[in-house]
Image (cartoon, rainbow, N blue to C red; front, side, top):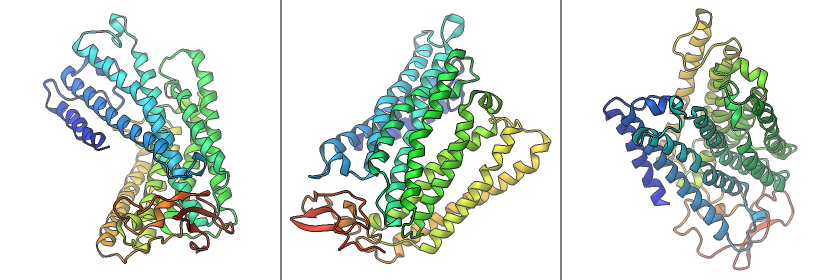
Length: 443
């Protein structure tokens, strides 16, 4: 785990070193598409390639650590069907990292070999296949979207169940849908390449799989909504961000269905419609859950409570600022405004000015968050061991947790989400019941 962390500064150093290299830095965009990446700025590009490989090695080590921990170090009685969904999400994410990351590492090796060994993997003039780089890149980079999102799915499941005081609806189906996303995530990569000149026959199967993958994500959305139905919902800050995530992710998912259709994708490819889609999926679907998780586990991590009023102010500034910034981009994209171009036609000027002003408001919301975290960490009131009355194991110890977490190993005896179920319990210590609804009353 420590090694995986310390590889990251090395990766960053290698990437930044490209700016000092003779001939200039890496200049092929964030995707590093060949042949641009393999025929220009050779020294700077090699530094970038090596940085990506170091970062990939760090990711793989972290994922292996999670996998080994989850498989071999679960508490007694914690079968896979008794694991919290956050653990399921991290398990699935780690499998994605271990399977997908070697492909992007291989592509960077090929590019580096083209530079330093004068091979021709991607040099079209000498018989190379530059489109092959895109296939390899997106075979990794679309699963990478789920690598960024699946932990957020787990966070949302934890927060929604606790704050609604209801068992998570369809627990096993929720876990299986994570595994379905893992499998289907490797079958949709070429929808990023509908206009790239790939084989036309590949478009239709990729369109179909890109739509089918909406099924497991739809299962998750409807399960969250069913969990909320008739629940005793508490609109604390973590719950607000979790609900914001669900609504924003649905919008991003709906625009993704349009992008999966070949005729529509051809029309809006490389426009601001794509920018809007990815931000609703990743900002709305990932950052909102990160904020939900920070607020939810802040008392456990620090032993102090955050300021609830500032937390809600942060949510509303973020929610409104986000939608004012990114929702208009759908219209701009449909009208044909290209992304990655600094200029635009005059008729888009007013809306771009509006988006720019809204983005400043969105950025300012983060200042409220930082102030709340710093102030609460230093001066916030002491937190209870279990302020949310949660059943999962981390809430059964003091806040912050003691060294080694538990004085004695807990025995897991039930599901972690049985809120409102009489006599339900999740774990026992030395035969004494803990994590029961008798000791963890509804709020």
